[in-house]
Length: 152
View: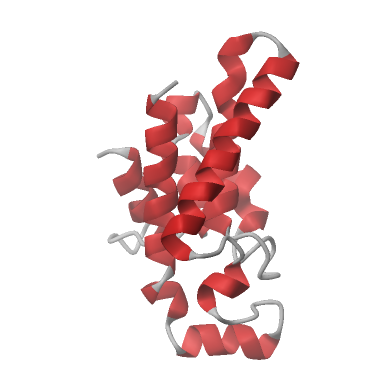
């Protein structure tokens, strides 16, 4: 199973005994092996980013999970300034590609619902936006990260 498939299986597991991860957790955890991260640590680090950072509708969790994964890309450079510049370049490219596919990177814009309000969250649940839209965001985020990391 590749990282893209892993991300989707973490986000919407077929086995009900496996806990669902939020979108940010699913993307970061999918790349944990490749990045040398403990999978549990990856899940813990990304736990607060689902629903647009703590369900505030801000930056999509799949995007924040991707940014965290890309943050590990500069490890091989042994110079913090070069590593930061390299990762920032990767993150800008990630955002460019994700926005080209979806038109936005904020959860509220992607879903058309404000998750920071009880009404907006309820609307998203009733319209099944999490089930209908979010798997595509998780898949695309993982696909873009995979492509960017292959170039490393």
